[in-house]
Length: 306
Ligand SMILES: [Zn+2]
View 1: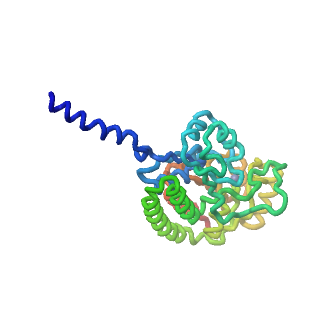
View 2: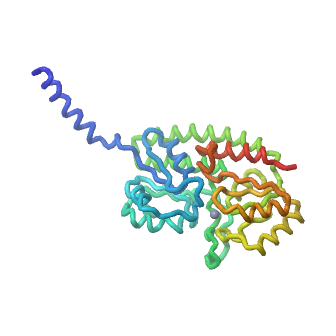
View 3: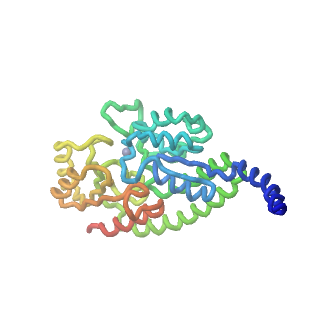
């Protein structure tokens, strides 16, 4: 018994030190999109717990600001968001409610992904929201180009390294490996999609402009008259004429919009309508950022029309 007590006493200081060591707590990364969370989880490895506020089957412009999202933000060490107004409809009140100074705009735990990217559709002159355009500052759907995933992985490694300097090298190595794998896969996806170069398409929302630029698709029109504005019968009628004139035979659509107008458009023009994921978890095959492009390429390759 005496022997046991001595052993236990010897253990107490060790247990206390272990208990108080901050390195046992994982860094909590909260993101507005699942692709950011997947990349942060890959770069952060065992040191990071990453989760997204939205699902890949949700329209990222319109998200229910539920109280459990405030709790997640309250506990976050790092917030990764798209910026460019993508989350303006729902994130600001959640951020205020979180009472977490670290993740507020410009805080040490704040990363605006749009600040890293080469952006498209930046408006010239005065920004106009009067007609409900949800892309007032430019197109925020840049993660649909895998080259931008590599840019994000690099920035996440730097940011995590600032937050946990002792692990900076670990994050850097993981990011380097991830970027290397992603580059190999990016070349492979591009090869599969090569026959689509120059193909004319109509898309529902302007979710695909970075993807189209990467693949070489020619976007000739949109089911929405403006980003975030549902189609009117008049707009669909004009689009039918345009698609017939130009012989457009492919319509791309996100999983989270009502399908009626796009189905009608496909029927009237004889075009193929493909509903494809735009984000991680956007369909059953897109479980990761790599999976998103595996899913996109295989479904597009299958849906290719002459
Ligand atoms: Zn959008």
